[in-house]
Image (cartoon, rainbow, N blue to C red; front, side, top):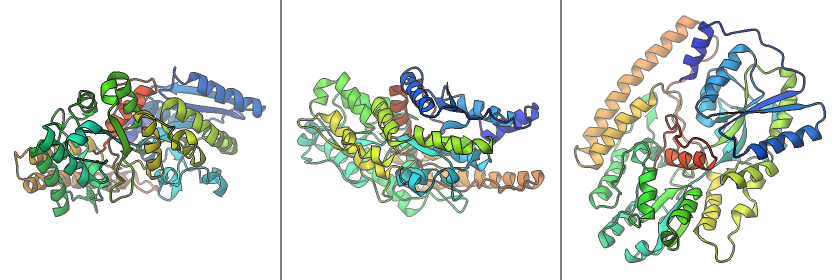
Length: 474
């Protein structure tokens, strides 16, 4: 449910109440989908902080990922928000635009900001203000079958998207196997990772000659047999991709390092001939698969409690705590020193692909950004029309230019209606706050659906991950 919709519904039900003062020095913080696997970790955080800070009471609350937004809006409207809440970046962006988060710049001096990776802080900068304390993220690596590469005459991992596609065609030509399985249901993210905008100046622009050229490369690779056709355009084709890789039918897999552990557990023969490398950054210089999770401060918290909240948030996300959590959860810390820890950066002698994957991901982590399209109502509906056009073009059912032109026309008709509706709503409401800009674009996450499915599964939560907000690319 969209935040504004939830907010309006709750206000209509009369849930708004006078802001209640939070109990002195009581800090309530929320996470999502951390119980039961990480109960010892967070219980330890609470115990250690309370011991070091007499008079401070810390309460940890964990919700399933699919209800935490509704719970948060309800508490904000009721005037009893928690002090801190776990959010991903798209959620935080929407909450911040709707005035439901508190900027934390005053709680992060220059020294404190220096403890975090600059890219992580950039992820949380909306309108020139910082809206959270970075905690962890992930990145993808290139996992490849060395025997298939050898049979295809390929001596190294690809270093660009063009090389990924060229290698995939070469693998198909010389071995009869597929080389690559891109998540083409997330084609918008792939476009933006390659520096090609999806929306500019409030209009869809993905039918330019450069966009057509990208889809033509994919079509050429598809025609040559280089792309795995299993679930190629499915919303989440990661299960098909990893199954094909474990079965020896796929040359390359783009996925987080945790996927390599799954290969090790399920297909030891394939794991024995697997190697890994950092995923190419592309012309944008942004790593594949980034998806930052952080702690935000909701609107309406007692301003007198903010210094105590900031102190606890900095402790919760410090190097030692981030490092410990990242090691347990198989993710990457967003704290600068922790991200450079030997656990991530060093490769032990005779290391297997799983250990190499951790180090390969660490190389990319400083370049990790959460990439997405912001402020577009019903974005999934628009994205599906783009995916249908790309599918028609890639499979040869329709001319690529014509397919993209038709999808652009659908998008622009919808975007024009949304702009008119937004202008009318702002005029009617007479709000003094700046309206949300439905045309502002932040770049889209690559491989988000498979990456987050992998991550949340490993975190011990519901494997049926909500990917409706997670629109990524290859």
